[in-house]
Amino acid sequence: MREGDQVTVTGPLLRHLAAALRLRVDEVVYLVDASERLECRVTVVSKSELVAKIQNITPLVEPPYRITLAIGTPKGKKLEEVVKRAVELGVHRIRPVVTERSVARAKEGRNRGERLSAIALEAAQQSGRASVPQVDEPVTFDRFAAEAPEGLGVVLWELESDNALLPLLQNRHTNCSNGSEHLTLLVGPEGGLALEEVARLTDIGYLRAGLGPTILRTETACVAALAVAAAALSGGAPVLTPQGQGL
Image (cartoon, rainbow, N blue to C red; front, top):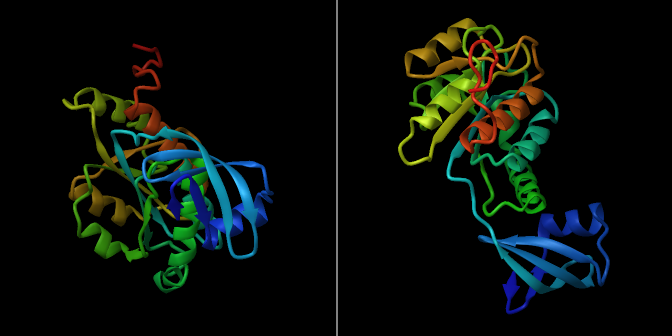
């Protein structure tokens, strides 16, 4: 809660700041409120709240592109790690999808929604994001495939060797008249996507793309795909020809 030049923090973010980061009185902490980054000095730390005084305010601007990350639900706590990294890399929305080879089932995700949202909030604060990405409840593959992709849809597939993600996105971005883009990326679970699933998605407009010659773990593929997408859509990496030469 923000009132005047004072900020009061409670709930999950308090636990992160006080327990994980062990902030103490008179230390500096950076918080995000709407589209502003607040430089604050801690004045009170207790079990119920952290109070800090605002010393400086910096405006924040989100990137002009919006990336939705769809991920075949992985096992264990891998989804939590993906949420953290995806938020740091500027993702707009995260959609867990229960695919044929998913180990985790949809019902397991429903009880984790609140925790995943809290993780997204903490990661947004830590990385200075102007907004907190939306983390959806898991959906079945049938439901996901019944919807058209938001903007350009791309399936990351380990068997795709003809189309690399970087030039595909950069060429698309270069031809976008207003410099903005909405992109949906789908990364499969452990074991990858089934051939039938990839075929269904290409039938509704998704493009296939690869991330290189090696097979990546699900969580690694998510980070790699988002990093490539952010670089491509922000103009931060060179366009490569098929011979690997920069244009």
